[in-house]
Image (cartoon, rainbow, N blue to C red):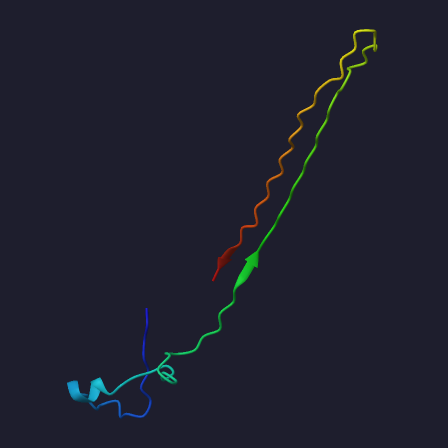
Amino acid sequence: MSSIMIQDLRHSQELDRHAMSSVHGGSLAQGGFGPFANVNVNVNQNIQQYQNVQVSALNNSVIGPNFVAPRFDVNPEQIGAANATVLF
């Protein structure tokens, strides 16, 4: 809950609507931008990638007279993303 303290008035003095409208507190707006404040911004970013490709060609088989060279279609894919979350 907000409160104001007025120190330069007599305790018995009452303020009318016009007098109360001129009462303000805090810091005045500087250059029309409002009061200035300290702003702390923390950005955490982390990227981890791992890729493991294992190809077993002959599986310990013996190459014989009817040997046909194996065909390999190895298409490894590695995906990474850098995402940043800004909290303030």
